[in-house]
Amino acid sequence: MFKKGMFALIVLAISSCAFAEGAPYFGLNVAVNSGSVQLSNAGVTSNFSAKGESGGVLVGFGADLENNLHVAAEIFGNDTTANTITKVINLAGTTAKIKPSYSYGASLLPGIRLGADTMLFLRIGGVRGRFDLTQTFGSAQQTSSTIANGAEVGAGAQLALSNNLSLRGEYNYINYSSFRSLGSSIHSHNNQLSMALLYRFL
Figure 1 (cartoon, rainbow, N blue to C red):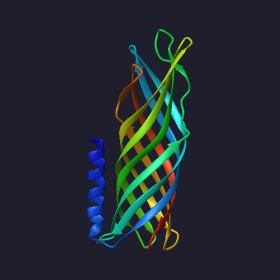
Figure 2: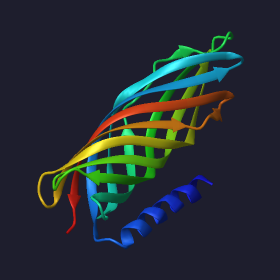
Figure 3: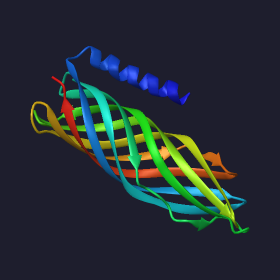
């Protein structure tokens, strides 16, 4: 269902761009992440902070429409250094540590141009992210990796540096669906501030 939704999002954006003059682009981005993870195990709920930097690549297609409107479709992939501390998660003394890992997804970016060089935009999309959970009880340790689906919304501004190069800054909020791993129920969300350098192929 998630994959179908992402595909429909891309088709919608490309269909919108198809009737206007547009161009593909490529970008590199870096971000600061401030996320949280809630883990429930054996009736005990623990809250983890997951902070770190991330970086990745993106590929998109954008087109100008009438009335200074703009629309773009993007696919992206990121990796992060975010991690949590180790905490006791139940009365039996089991400890856990969660590491958010890579993520990828697709977004629709509707925007409005304020001038020849400046644009404001919104981001609406879907994300899939990997989470690595390590639980330890006594001398026994278990590790499990899970891919979780999430929704992403955000807003930002883009400044043209030349005909080909643009600089983008944005804030995004990512909310992942709850999932189960090693007997624990896990829910995560992330606040992200990012910068990207884009190259547009004219």
